[in-house]
Image (tube, chains in turn yellow, brown):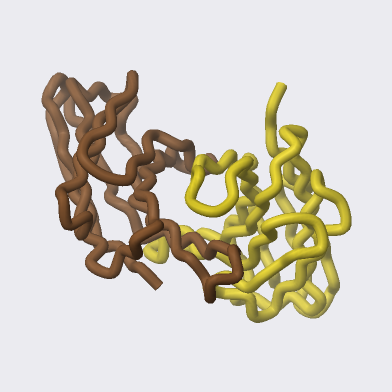
Length: 115
Length: 114
């Protein structure tokens, strides 16, 4: 089954404790992206990657890191989480680049709480 | 970067046609317009995408006028299960490097009433 998986689905952590949220897709997609969703603010892009070893900042990259060492994986790293990073996080992937298509497939989400 | 503006919310009765309009005044020549649907606590799901004029699939229609500064998502005969948030998305070209930063707006919350 074609899908985007995220782990963990739920995470409660404390300020300053480094964490990684994994994202994996089995569709051989070139494009991957991370979003956060907060009430009243909609979906905001954190980072995206057009291909292996190519990443770029989205609208809200501060406090986050990403890496794209393999096509299928795109982990999101919070080196020193803070309470304002409490949010619902979505990973997405897409086959198209350029103007061909923007049909993104989203993962189930990771609900992160930082205390 | 092209930004989008949509109504915050809309109500509709079951069985009616619903039209949600999105404004994107700064759309670039190569940008496509894409709509997504999101249910609570789920990731968004692709509905439809278009560049100009009209696109139709089994779920919805997308109308784009000649100037492309707006677009309208049309959902025929909505049911209770269509209650969701609908996002209009316009692809941005970034610095000509071939990379694309995609921006979601705040979406339109559609409530379908029995």
